[in-house]
Image (cartoon, rainbow, N blue to C red; front, side):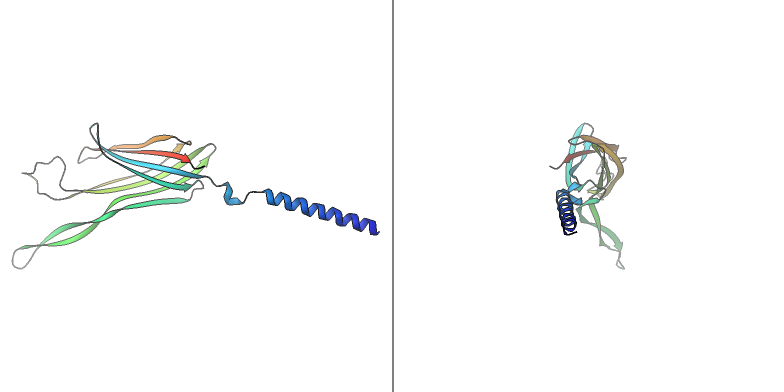
Length: 182
């Protein structure tokens, strides 16, 4: 009887030690998550000439978690009002201009589904293409919004969108690059 109890205790000890070793070798759940670097380049072209190119780089976890970039300024825009004396007195309104990017990345096999929303607003001194003699020097506020998903593999760059601005004729292009962080 004592011998069978001793054997049972030894078997239990071996089982506990094997389970402990197996549990110690398992990776914690967060170690499985893949971190990627997503670069979004917002470029403006006048004809074939690139007039601006702004890169935005962000790190994202490839688990559909959201990552956002917000950059910009508040610009003062004068709004005139006529006083009792008939003179114009400006009132100032501050308007947000800049770029907002929301991104999430989800793995799909060896590739990644990158969903991006871009909202870009900018302020220009006067309406483009208008002659000064015929146009008041009033500011123009430009807005550009786009959202979509794209499938990318590690190190790949694709053009997300190319769209023309109705007022200026400028072409806005967005290129997206994905790199897996190692």
